[in-house]
Image (tube, rainbow, N blue to C red; front, side, top):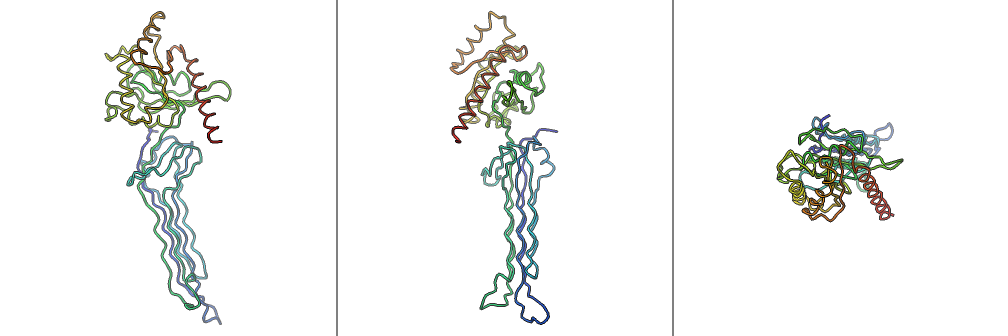
Length: 345
């Protein structure tokens, strides 16, 4: 199925059923009084998060979702049946945004999360409601109110602990293949990744974290060049970014430092919050240099980038430095989880 992470839909909650004007008619009871029942409430429209689907592709073919109308009230004080709710299943990580106002209605970040996006209409009142000591035969009833309707933008953002960031062909897909069971396409030319990939990295028994890979980012991405920009939102829910740098980009004239600075610049232009996330530098493809040249070349890149954070030297293909990186990531994720537990407690 084609990956789709952004789609517009229309939601229409059900209208409330109308109240009934009726009078009791029984033998020997000529003045039975009003007995018109209320209508039923209109059905609501909900989004329900599930792990059983991972794309919004189905909404391209089914874009209108409606709650059921409430039934009208009937005589003998019979209340109309409320309309059935409309439950729309969406992937975990989906955000709902009102297209007209730009308001974020809510996020669904865990399995089973439910979000009300359109409220059904309130039921109309039957004439029984209007009887009083001075009005014993009311002929008044009210119509149900209209259900809400709105245009909603669904936006899927992958939920991952670690996000991979880098130029095309930096080795992001090779890394996620090496450490997880994810199998993104890998080839010796750029832009092999055309959609986000999510992998689970297992570190021993009952220890794991998730890693997200997005298409490479090129210069001008903040203005819409390339594919990486439209998928950057998938990194907003991550706790840590791994900035992969190809230390020997023989396919292009652009050096590793220039390429890394381009990524940082585009990131800052697209989102200040994303640019301020914790970020580690991962120097990849050390297997393309002789062993005695690797450290000198890496130190030169670190110095020119004026990098003062954590740095790892790896070969995603050969496996050099992978264990050290994975265990450091696991420790970071566990520390973050412990911090969140303390804050919530």
